[in-house]
Length: 184
Image (cartoon, rainbow, N blue to C red; front, side):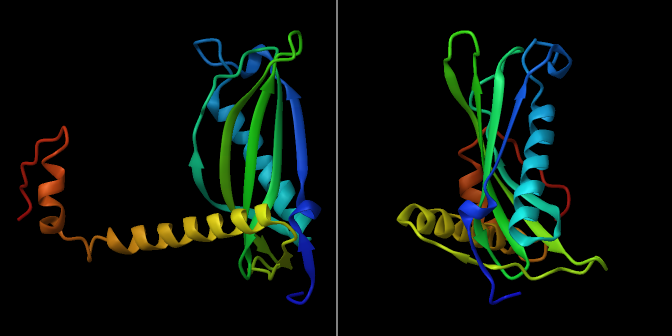
C-alpha cells in the first residue's frame, strides 16, 4: 500500500448539523463536549476515507473554542488529511456556525487530530503516501510535521527523569506561583 498515493482533497469530508436545545450547556450555548464528539466523528471518517482502514484517535493537538455556538445555528465541520506518516495521519478540522436566519457565519474552532490506521487484527496499518499539489498543501504538511516534532521534544524535555528544576528556577519566579518543595 505504501506506493499508493492520494491527495488531501480525496480525504475531504463535510458534516453539517443543526444545533438543538439538547446540545446546550447550562449557559444556553452548545456544549463543547458535543462539538468535540462531532469533531472525533469527522476525524474518523476523514482518516478512514483516506486510508481505507478503520482508524483510531491517538491524540488531539489543540482545541481552541474561538466563538460560542448558539442553539438553532447550523454547524459545519470540514476535515481533510494534512499530514501522513507511515501509519498515522493528521486531520485538520475547521468548525463554523451559521445563523440560518441572518446568514452570519462564525469560525468557532480549528483543531488537529492524530489518527492511526488499523488492520483487522488491530495492528497498525500503512497508509497511502500523500500527494501534495498546492503550496497551501505544503504549508499544512510542514505545519503538521512541526507540531509533531514539537510534541516529541516537549515530551522528551519534560520527562520526569530528564527534567531539571534548576533550568527553570528563574523562569518560574516570573509567574503567579509559590514554590515550597518538600521532595528534595
